[in-house]
Length: 226
Image 1: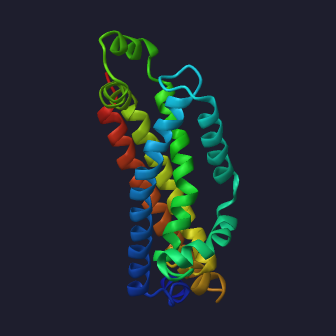
Image 2: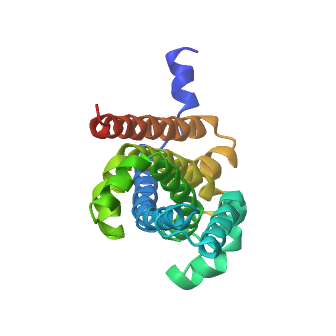
Protein backbone atom coordinates (compact mmCIF):
# COMPACT_ATOMS: atom_id res chain seq x y z
CA UNK A 1 0.00 0.00 0.00
CA UNK A 2 1.20 3.53 -0.81
CA UNK A 3 0.65 6.53 1.48
CA UNK A 4 -2.61 7.49 -0.22
CA UNK A 5 -4.07 4.01 0.16
CA UNK A 6 -3.12 3.89 3.85
CA UNK A 7 -4.70 7.31 4.34
CA UNK A 8 -7.94 6.13 2.76
CA UNK A 9 -7.86 2.89 4.80
CA UNK A 10 -7.84 4.83 8.06
CA UNK A 11 -9.91 7.77 6.80
CA UNK A 12 -12.81 7.10 9.20
CA UNK A 13 -10.64 6.84 12.31
CA UNK A 14 -11.76 9.73 14.51
CA UNK A 15 -8.89 10.58 16.84
CA UNK A 16 -11.13 12.36 19.35
CA UNK A 17 -13.59 9.45 19.45
CA UNK A 18 -10.75 6.95 19.76
CA UNK A 19 -9.26 8.91 22.67
CA UNK A 20 -12.63 9.12 24.41
CA UNK A 21 -13.16 5.37 23.99
CA UNK A 22 -9.69 4.71 25.39
CA UNK A 23 -10.49 6.80 28.47
CA UNK A 24 -13.82 4.97 28.84
CA UNK A 25 -11.98 1.64 28.75
CA UNK A 26 -9.46 2.83 31.34
CA UNK A 27 -12.34 4.06 33.54
CA UNK A 28 -14.17 0.72 33.32
CA UNK A 29 -11.05 -1.33 33.91
CA UNK A 30 -9.72 0.93 36.68
CA UNK A 31 -12.91 1.01 38.76
CA UNK A 32 -13.53 -2.68 38.16
CA UNK A 33 -10.01 -3.56 39.27
CA UNK A 34 -10.43 -1.63 42.53
CA UNK A 35 -13.71 -3.39 43.39
CA UNK A 36 -12.32 -6.72 42.23
CA UNK A 37 -9.42 -6.35 44.65
CA UNK A 38 -11.67 -5.18 47.50
CA UNK A 39 -13.94 -8.22 47.06
CA UNK A 40 -11.56 -10.85 45.73
CA UNK A 41 -8.72 -10.40 48.22
CA UNK A 42 -10.74 -10.99 51.42
CA UNK A 43 -12.75 -13.69 49.67
CA UNK A 44 -9.57 -15.49 48.63
CA UNK A 45 -8.17 -15.19 52.15
CA UNK A 46 -11.39 -16.57 53.63
CA UNK A 47 -11.44 -19.51 51.23
CA UNK A 48 -7.84 -20.30 52.11
CA UNK A 49 -8.37 -20.04 55.87
CA UNK A 50 -11.48 -22.26 55.88
CA UNK A 51 -9.91 -24.97 53.70
CA UNK A 52 -9.17 -28.33 55.35
CA UNK A 53 -5.98 -28.21 57.39
CA UNK A 54 -5.83 -24.41 57.57
CA UNK A 55 -6.15 -21.99 60.49
CA UNK A 56 -9.95 -21.65 60.43
CA UNK A 57 -10.82 -24.90 58.71
CA UNK A 58 -14.55 -25.22 58.19
CA UNK A 59 -15.57 -27.69 55.51
CA UNK A 60 -19.19 -26.44 55.00
CA UNK A 61 -18.09 -22.80 54.62
CA UNK A 62 -15.21 -23.76 52.36
CA UNK A 63 -17.47 -25.96 50.22
CA UNK A 64 -20.08 -23.21 49.79
CA UNK A 65 -17.53 -20.49 48.97
CA UNK A 66 -15.63 -22.74 46.59
CA UNK A 67 -18.86 -23.76 44.86
CA UNK A 68 -19.98 -20.14 44.36
CA UNK A 69 -16.57 -19.11 43.05
CA UNK A 70 -16.55 -21.99 40.58
CA UNK A 71 -20.05 -21.09 39.35
CA UNK A 72 -19.15 -17.50 38.51
CA UNK A 73 -15.83 -18.56 37.01
CA UNK A 74 -17.54 -21.06 34.72
CA UNK A 75 -20.14 -18.66 33.27
CA UNK A 76 -18.93 -17.13 29.97
CA UNK A 77 -18.66 -13.37 30.42
CA UNK A 78 -20.95 -12.54 27.50
CA UNK A 79 -23.70 -14.61 29.16
CA UNK A 80 -22.97 -13.07 32.57
CA UNK A 81 -23.53 -9.63 31.04
CA UNK A 82 -27.06 -10.65 30.12
CA UNK A 83 -27.84 -12.61 33.28
CA UNK A 84 -27.13 -9.77 35.70
CA UNK A 85 -28.57 -7.00 33.51
CA UNK A 86 -31.62 -6.61 35.84
CA UNK A 87 -29.30 -6.23 38.84
CA UNK A 88 -27.15 -3.74 36.93
CA UNK A 89 -30.27 -1.75 36.03
CA UNK A 90 -31.27 -1.50 39.70
CA UNK A 91 -27.73 -0.69 40.83
CA UNK A 92 -26.73 2.02 38.33
CA UNK A 93 -30.04 2.89 36.66
CA UNK A 94 -29.10 1.51 33.24
CA UNK A 95 -28.07 -1.76 31.65
CA UNK A 96 -25.97 -0.15 28.88
CA UNK A 97 -23.14 2.32 28.92
CA UNK A 98 -19.71 2.58 30.51
CA UNK A 99 -20.83 2.61 34.14
CA UNK A 100 -23.31 -0.22 33.55
CA UNK A 101 -20.45 -2.43 32.37
CA UNK A 102 -18.68 -2.23 35.75
CA UNK A 103 -20.94 -4.55 37.84
CA UNK A 104 -20.66 -7.50 35.41
CA UNK A 105 -16.93 -6.87 35.10
CA UNK A 106 -16.59 -7.15 38.89
CA UNK A 107 -18.87 -10.20 39.08
CA UNK A 108 -16.80 -11.90 36.39
CA UNK A 109 -13.34 -11.05 37.74
CA UNK A 110 -13.64 -11.05 41.56
CA UNK A 111 -14.12 -14.86 41.85
CA UNK A 112 -11.26 -15.37 39.42
CA UNK A 113 -8.97 -13.13 41.48
CA UNK A 114 -10.12 -14.78 44.72
CA UNK A 115 -8.98 -18.14 43.40
CA UNK A 116 -5.60 -16.68 42.42
CA UNK A 117 -5.23 -15.24 45.93
CA UNK A 118 -6.03 -18.64 47.43
CA UNK A 119 -3.40 -20.32 45.24
CA UNK A 120 -0.81 -17.70 46.24
CA UNK A 121 -1.52 -18.21 49.93
CA UNK A 122 -1.24 -21.99 49.57
CA UNK A 123 2.32 -21.48 48.32
CA UNK A 124 3.39 -19.86 51.61
CA UNK A 125 5.72 -22.15 53.56
CA UNK A 126 3.72 -23.83 56.33
CA UNK A 127 6.79 -23.74 58.53
CA UNK A 128 6.61 -19.96 58.67
CA UNK A 129 2.95 -20.11 59.70
CA UNK A 130 3.66 -22.73 62.38
CA UNK A 131 6.51 -20.60 63.74
CA UNK A 132 4.18 -17.61 64.06
CA UNK A 133 1.62 -19.78 65.84
CA UNK A 134 4.24 -21.07 68.27
CA UNK A 135 5.09 -17.48 69.14
CA UNK A 136 1.46 -16.85 70.08
CA UNK A 137 0.42 -14.83 67.04
CA UNK A 138 -3.33 -14.50 66.49
CA UNK A 139 -5.02 -15.44 63.24
CA UNK A 140 -5.26 -11.78 62.23
CA UNK A 141 -1.57 -11.22 63.01
CA UNK A 142 -0.63 -14.26 60.94
CA UNK A 143 -2.70 -12.95 58.02
CA UNK A 144 -1.26 -9.43 58.22
CA UNK A 145 2.35 -10.16 59.12
CA UNK A 146 2.99 -13.58 57.57
CA UNK A 147 0.56 -14.67 54.89
CA UNK A 148 0.09 -11.41 52.98
CA UNK A 149 3.78 -10.35 52.99
CA UNK A 150 4.92 -13.84 51.95
CA UNK A 151 2.26 -14.14 49.23
CA UNK A 152 2.63 -10.57 47.99
CA UNK A 153 4.47 -11.39 44.73
CA UNK A 154 1.82 -13.98 43.83
CA UNK A 155 -1.00 -11.58 44.69
CA UNK A 156 0.51 -8.85 42.51
CA UNK A 157 0.91 -11.39 39.71
CA UNK A 158 -2.73 -12.37 40.21
CA UNK A 159 -4.02 -8.80 40.04
CA UNK A 160 -1.96 -8.29 36.87
CA UNK A 161 -3.51 -11.35 35.26
CA UNK A 162 -6.95 -10.18 36.36
CA UNK A 163 -6.33 -6.68 35.02
CA UNK A 164 -5.37 -8.06 31.63
CA UNK A 165 -8.49 -10.24 31.64
CA UNK A 166 -10.61 -7.20 32.52
CA UNK A 167 -9.34 -5.38 29.43
CA UNK A 168 -10.60 -8.28 27.34
CA UNK A 169 -13.89 -8.37 29.26
CA UNK A 170 -14.36 -4.62 28.78
CA UNK A 171 -13.99 -5.06 25.02
CA UNK A 172 -16.55 -7.86 25.12
CA UNK A 173 -18.97 -5.56 26.93
CA UNK A 174 -19.14 -3.55 23.71
CA UNK A 175 -21.42 -6.25 22.30
CA UNK A 176 -24.27 -4.91 24.48
CA UNK A 177 -23.28 -1.25 24.21
CA UNK A 178 -20.90 -1.21 27.17
CA UNK A 179 -18.83 1.63 25.76
CA UNK A 180 -15.06 1.85 25.39
CA UNK A 181 -12.82 0.53 22.66
CA UNK A 182 -14.76 -2.71 22.28
CA UNK A 183 -17.99 -0.83 21.63
CA UNK A 184 -16.20 1.45 19.15
CA UNK A 185 -14.66 -1.51 17.29
CA UNK A 186 -18.05 -3.25 17.03
CA UNK A 187 -20.33 -0.31 16.18
CA UNK A 188 -17.99 1.74 13.98
CA UNK A 189 -15.70 -1.01 12.78
CA UNK A 190 -17.48 -4.34 12.43
CA UNK A 191 -21.07 -3.15 11.84
CA UNK A 192 -19.98 -0.51 9.31
CA UNK A 193 -17.40 -2.79 7.68
CA UNK A 194 -14.61 -0.34 8.53
CA UNK A 195 -11.54 -2.48 9.15
CA UNK A 196 -9.37 0.56 9.83
CA UNK A 197 -11.35 1.53 12.95
CA UNK A 198 -11.32 -2.07 14.19
CA UNK A 199 -7.55 -2.38 13.71
CA UNK A 200 -6.77 0.88 15.53
CA UNK A 201 -9.06 0.01 18.45
CA UNK A 202 -7.51 -3.46 18.65
CA UNK A 203 -3.99 -2.03 18.52
CA UNK A 204 -4.75 0.26 21.47
CA UNK A 205 -6.16 -2.67 23.47
CA UNK A 206 -3.02 -4.69 22.77
CA UNK A 207 -0.88 -1.71 23.82
CA UNK A 208 -2.80 -1.39 27.10
CA UNK A 209 -2.34 -5.09 27.83
CA UNK A 210 1.40 -4.84 27.19
CA UNK A 211 1.70 -1.74 29.37
CA UNK A 212 -0.18 -3.19 32.34
CA UNK A 213 1.63 -6.52 32.04
CA UNK A 214 4.97 -4.74 32.10
CA UNK A 215 4.02 -2.68 35.17
CA UNK A 216 2.70 -5.80 36.91
CA UNK A 217 5.90 -7.72 36.19
CA UNK A 218 7.95 -4.89 37.69
CA UNK A 219 5.86 -4.96 40.88
CA UNK A 220 6.23 -8.74 41.16
CA UNK A 221 10.01 -8.48 40.68
CA UNK A 222 10.26 -5.68 43.25
CA UNK A 223 8.45 -7.60 46.00
CA UNK A 224 9.88 -11.05 45.31
CA UNK A 225 12.23 -12.05 48.11
CA UNK A 226 15.76 -12.61 46.90
